[in-house]
Image (cartoon, rainbow over the protein chains, first blue to last red):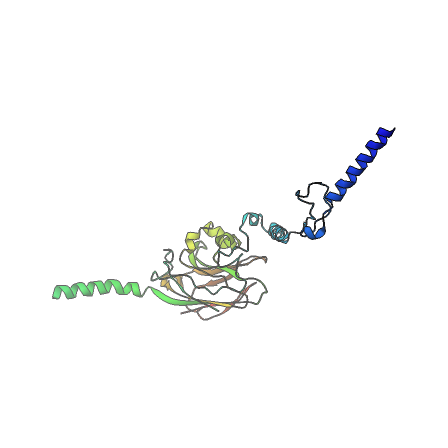
Amino acid sequence: MKPLLTILSLTTALGAATVALAVTAPAQCPGSCQLSLSPDATDTPLLRVDSDDDDDWKWFGLRQKHGDDDDEDEDEDDCEDDDDDEGCMTTGGGNAAPAAPSTPPKNGLFGNGQPPQVKSN
Amino acid sequence: MKTLLAALALTTAMTAPGLALAKNVTLSTTMKSYGGDGAYLAIYVTDPSGAYAGSLWMAGGKSKYYKHLSDWARATGGDTAEVSGITGASVGAGRSLELSMDLADALFDAGYTLHIDAAVEDMRDSPNEIAVPLTSDGAGKAVKGRSYIDTFSYNF
């Protein structure tokens, strides 16, 4: 009986010590650190994960939006691509950039082979 | 000396007719305030039989949207070579587009028709929104569009 009680008290003491070691002060853990089950203070504590990643939802929203349109839009570039001067389809206000001087197609419609002069407001 | 003069006269005679076979034409398009993004416009010509003859201008730079200019796309198979060198920016709502170009005299008073297909992102496509015969009498007369174009006219 006595050995049994001794063992029980020993395990109880060990358990209490483990809990005491594992509880980390909030100030020592950045962000939303909570109780860690690991007795080793160097282990990564549990973190509250924020699933509301705005970028992902925004991208998904764009995909969904474009998914409601013609199906070929699903394969198109991100509308926020800044490489093109017209964004998605347009720049929204009617980009007044004139066409670069170039030879028009030889379709017999143009008299002098010169490209049209464009003026837009 | 006489030989030189003869040669000059000959070359002048050969050149002059070419200069007289085209006229400077101004195409003026005014958009309605339709409350949407800039419009893509395909301006093209059909011959007296109604067959596609060629393009005059493409307003809108992204070829992936040319399919929304459906009559033009059907006639050309979406071939961007048809608008190589004659492509510019899309035209915003309430804005205007003025194009000046030398067009062959043969297009006028010969049964040719100028067409404009229009399309706006997230709005209904408007094929053949403008269809005007190219005639001397038609110069300076504004025609009204159906959806996105307020008026269109051509002048010499």
